[in-house]
Structure formats: C-alpha cells, structure tokens
Length: 80
Image (tube, rainbow, N blue to C red; front, side, top):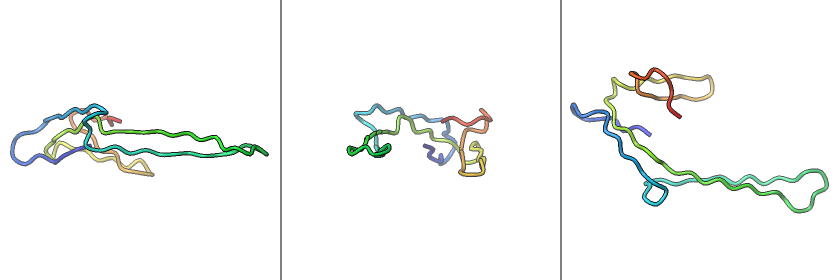
C-alpha cells in the first residue's frame, strides 16, 4: 500500500502485524472433483503488513497487461 506524501517527508514506512493491521481480507475457494459429494474448501486470510508514504513523483506505475503495479521509482522493480 502507498500513501502519497504531503510536503517533503517521504519514505515513511509504517509496519503492522496481523494483530494491529488496519485492513484484513480473505478468500474462500470451494470445489469438488468427479463424483465427490463433500467439497474441498480452502480459506486464505491476508492483512496489510506495511504502508509506505512516498512523494507522488517517487512512485513508478507499470501496467502488466492485466493490472497496474506501483513501486518506488528508486528501486525500479515491483515490490509484491
């Protein structure tokens, strides 16, 4: 996650744990194979572990063909 900095303060990083994250989300996948009567259920939970505060001019946006990836332009490579 990025927050655009106001003023000259950039590269401010706020780290979070699963216990104090400002945002959690998840997904559930349920499927069956063949004549299987009970579905197989997979649940995944996620949380925001870091928010970086960057000046807008420091953020490079790259379109992958499917979605946009934003990262610090000094790194010149995506951070996933």
